[in-house]
Image (cartoon, rainbow, N blue to C red; front, side, top):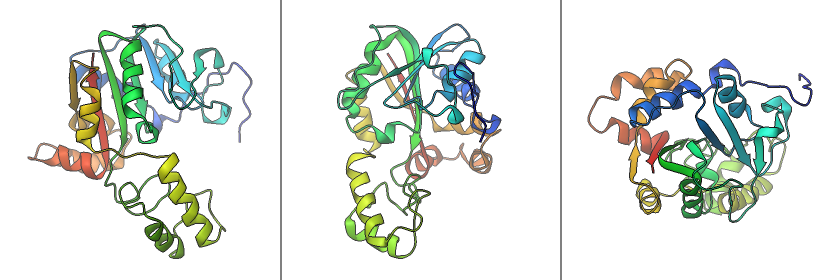
Amino acid sequence: MTNYTAGDRVLPPPGQRVVAIFEQLSMAAGVPLAPAHRVLDFGAGAGRHVAEFREAGYDAWGVDQIYSSHAQGSSEETFLRRVHAPDYRLPFDDEEFDCVYSTSVMEHVLDPGGALAEIARVLRPGGVSLHVFPARWRPIEPHMHVPLGGRVQSFGAMSLWARLGIRNEFQDGLPAQDVALANTQYCKTGISYPTAREWELRARPHFARVEWDEATFVSASRPVSRVSRLVAPLMGMPGAPSLYRGLHTRVLVLVR
């Protein structure tokens, strides 16, 4: 593992970069992003996408509960701020940002309404908020690696998969019962998969436009995603974006 010095700007690998994807999503929403715009990574982790946006010329900032691993991203902690559960109050003034974005974060938000209200508060009028996160019915839940784990979350289901050997990278060698108990608890405290309709209803009091745009995401992510390259030719078919939203990835577009 590479060791980084405090202050280093550590970019994500080319296959995991997102600036071009979010630029295309914002363009499709009619609120184009451009360098020098002020953007906020909601759930920035160690800040690797903050580093990527800053490298591209944006005034980028990030928030998360924990950001410590230089190996995962930028160690420029000057541009990172902490938030604390359960209210996730963002440490910024009203209407500070042109864009608030997230990648694989909203499935961890246990209070979607509160999070959306805070995002709207720090977003300028006419600004855009873009969120890419796993679908509720994704065949393999990406954190536990449990089949249909975003929807079927009973202890019995978790026990079955644990006995069949299903483990994530942190559970190798653990007894099946321990894995099942941990996954059942994680479903209560670590992940949340509201329906698309619930997301819409939560967002509408705070945003002028609430939309889904999986088609643009698939097109924009083709250079870095094998799945996107496979499904891109199908996205023009009736119902294909909705099916993709239900089974693979949601792309929530909010304009204040």
